[in-house]
Length: 127
Image: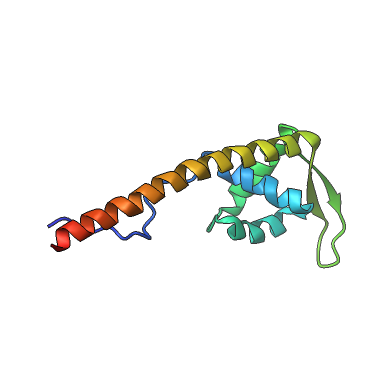
């Protein structure tokens, strides 16, 4: 007998560079420190992000001209680096939104057809 897979079990992965897209979104909402971004990243669907990987992504994004940063004083502890979007970063935020909207429409169509197919097969198998 084949093992049944849970409908909730993840079957695939996220788009390549999705961490970058999420960081662009969070920084676009408001300039932020790396620590704040690490705290907020789970709110856009990424759980258990390695802090080192997050900071490396921010450095690469800054090298690519998508964000800029500066050191600022913190009321609670040492100075922190604050990140904000550049004009190019805003352009890439728009690109990501377009890509994800298009993917969403394809995925929605697939899932609608999937639900109908499963309902049909389940009904036939119950007879």
